[in-house]
Length: 293
Image (cartoon, rainbow, N blue to C red; front, side, top):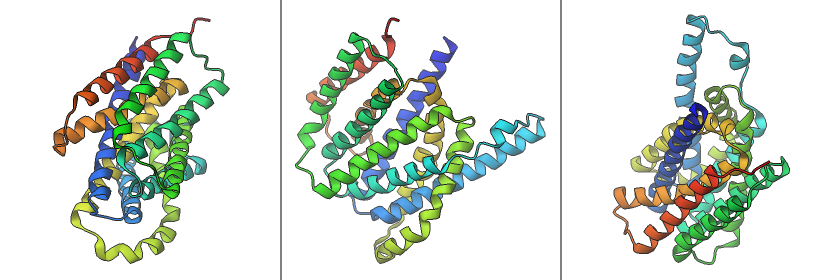
């Protein structure tokens, strides 16, 4: 029961962070406060800086308290994970300005679901009939929620958002084997900075359009919603099956939409409330139901 409670708490916090990240991206990119390339640069830099400071304090306390653990201190992330993180972050930002919010969310989470559930099935995480039904109902509710704002996507935007979803699915899956979620996430962010020179070359032409609002929103996205949020997600991932981790992420657009109502004065409709209840109920049924062996 303690493990279930721990998984629920960390998953809930991670989903809040994902929704906050969606809100920061929407405010920064949709309002034109910053371009996608500088947004990605600042997001990765602020995430690496924030986690670097936290990791230093964490490592110092481990050594001072005599809790020196070679397995933890040798966990420095991986190039595969950092490349997945970089591809996700850059593709998402560029695609975001090409697509409507609903269209982007549909493509992104469809790609995430296919990647993570496909991997879960490949690893023989069998689903019960009730879980399959709950999953289909959750997806239907998600489509119902997003389709009113969806439009025919550009080929470039749709392709990039699909790539972003696959990359995020891979990044999430790789979190199941990490030893230290904090150090793994921190070093993944630090490793991703090798792409900074190329990103800077591409972003130079947009420097004149940078605003204080855009820089602050990108920093919040990187340090808080991404850096700390992804660390918490990596704590939850080993406690969840890949299929469970995939399905719970369908809650993110719901939480993000509620945040939009609260912080951006966006309209709350009856359709939104109905779709949200359908999604959240289906996800709960999926998580609580288990395949009988």
